[in-house]
Length: 636
Image (spheres, rainbow, N blue to C red):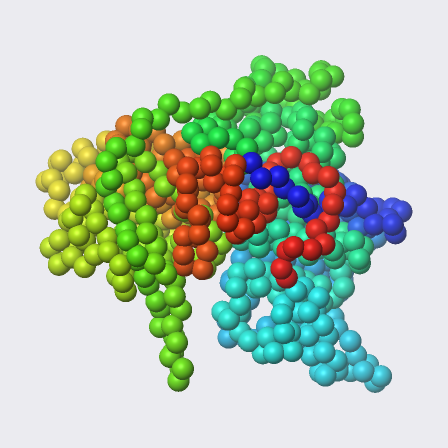
């Protein structure tokens, strides 16, 4: 495997650090449910942050990470409120501060970087207007104490240049849709920096980004941390990002802190079973093709049903009777690590290393089922020049029965366009496509109906891809109805069979999607895709929106279904570690072309194309790295 020659510096502290800048003590957050009961979303969270420090907060969805961050400046949504504890910023308690005092802190002393720049930015405003609004509240004044518009614009240009936006004097008048995903995230960082804050709260700032863009954003945050002494709280579920970025890590589960300490110590010698489970579920780029990912059994707890015991007890392999009767305190162990685990408190050694991941016994792929030759797709652009954007530029590939072909590349490389063309959701502009030897490039309407029955898709977002008004049973039965398969009784039986195949209880057929977690919703989407009995399943980023433990479960499910049903899979993702483990072969896309293809292990161990090598070098692994801040080689 290609070595990772560069790493973002996980700074321990800025030279100016001498005392706690931010001190959180016994923080509790409650939401009022519709029936008037209190839901305790965060319980007893405590940590300190010094100037220039970098702290990661990790955990599954629902663990309380984002709620904790929002509670620091009392920006909780809806009925949320800080119920206990204090949040001391240079001695000032923000938990009891007035609205006027909080306005002086938000943006000026504590800045926030949100996860999704497309929803955080107003599409009708230019990025310059976004920055000027922030600077109007926190920016420079003229000699009469008035806000200076010219100074604001100059400062906005300076900020865009600081975060690596090319040609900031020109781009300041562009709208958000005219920027790439990574550039939009840079704009959010510029807005957060406008008030020159002491603390940056970054809530999943790289989750939706490709590995190379992710590395650029992390390097930018590290530069800012080093040069300005801004402390960073990084909220993420990506252990590789933690390893590369932060000196300390705080692990949350069920609204509480279950472990914290130096990143190198926690990631290499976890003391809490939950931390160990998260690390075991992380896909490793070093693991060969066919390695089975290990998920954490069960689901995160329902916060309305938490009892008196450890919240992790129902999923823990080390659980004892006493774990169910009392909440374990967060106690200091060795090497600066604290853990809230009764069995761990009596141990002087770290938890035993998990068993090495098992290799899957996969049958050899069969005959070619899908073949593409020279596929082209161009999207038109409005305007007098009328030039189009070439999304696919002569793409050729084959896919065999029982084979998984992984497709990797950055955003804009053509991966999703290829998926839509293969599934006949979009027509191609050139090239040919054959299914079991039959030309399906431009099928007639009746033939198209048959083709779509054979080629089904699993989509990226399990929340947006399911109709919230339909029951699960109706969602899964929809393809059966569309293709005229079976009568009502036969369809009901088929739905029950499909839900079982997807690892769900058939009894959930009468419930609606809102009742399910992200992983469960993705299982429903997989059951729907399997309904018409396809030969080919095209999975477009099927796990990128999921927690790492749930990701392992979904990848394992797809692998089992392929083995049992003989499916051919196209697995599209930007996480090379996941793609390597699930795929027989990998095709690397760049600017609409396949620049490299080969066996999964060969592409990852012996990459030939410079672009492939760059993707591999940028892929974060959950292993603490030598702190060498990347100075060159990453375009900004």
